[in-house]
Image 1 (cartoon, rainbow, N blue to C red):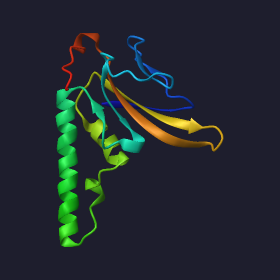
Image 2: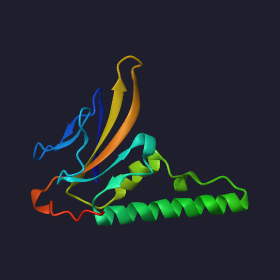
Image 3: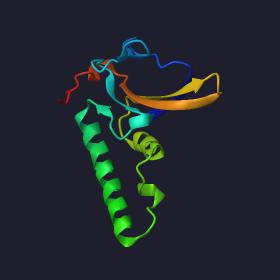
Length: 139
């Protein structure tokens, strides 16, 4: 997937293809947005909201692989190889490598004007082709 990185002082996001609200500081996340395939939030990135079944299965597989690698490292008394560490860097790589040519990830870093630092990140996966919005929602 293509990843577009933004640093903003707000978390208001609309789908560029339709103008559909994805999230807003006032109303929160629009989980019903047809173009939204899923999202991860920095603070709780291990607990994403994912509507697309294939994306959810791929993420769950990655989480299991990382957990198994951690258990093996713990049993052997070794440091975990960074390649298997479940981190936001690993999330970024997962999204970059995921094969979905019509999907775009908007990574939004919240920029704090007072501290001049990026305080939080959100990754929002959007389907940009209107014909593909027939999404099976997972309960």
